[in-house]
Image (tube, rainbow, N blue to C red; front, side, top):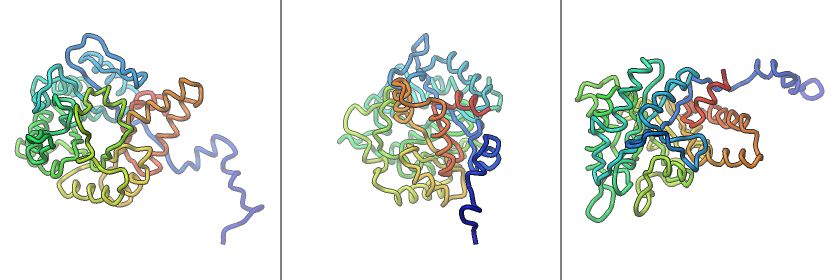
Length: 327
């Protein structure tokens, strides 16, 4: 039998900061944070993203500087998103050995020397002239199977540039299997796959579209990203990706989908990541600017909620700042 009040007083263990630290059930560590970075071709200075205060589109040099700062703060990983100077219907720059992400991958792999996991988003939306995540049929639909061939080529190009982990985010059926086969066939058996396994068609991506310059020129992504109404479908997607060879899986967005994070974490035996997306970041920064929220407390509280739900890794634009706060 559990004791009852007045013998039971849970507040005893909340009385001092030292007591609260001693019995804390959940902790966030810097090495669990992953910093998303945008690298843009053809600019000479970092370009601020207006809807995401403090976030920029990096030059090659500023990306190296930001990556070193993240490493010094103890951040565990960096994931790159590329914005090419020229786009076409096939997203040809995505697998160009001289493309913006491939050049930055070589930089960071050399600079960081294995101290930080170097990752790359693997998709086509930032590279295609139409802004969709794959090749199009004559009628304007995304061609799933033709797109898999492009993803395979991008994966090999990123691996050749030194990536540690590729992150396929296009939500094409069979994408993990196609990428795993291509990597293994090219001899890159050690490159891991972080599958965006449960990526929802979310309104929270709005500011990202500005940062990555990847908004669709027509239509939307509802036909390939998940319906926000569905939870069981997320578990099916995750199980399919693991069966195809995913080493890690991701839920995106995070804060409005913590139930999905918890369900996935309770179901699988691979690491589960969650993405604190641009809309979450922008809302908090906007409220802070109005003086409505305590910025540092809210940042750390939201990260704690991700970990409490079961996310082992958190992609967040505050990764470097949060790592410094946590240390």
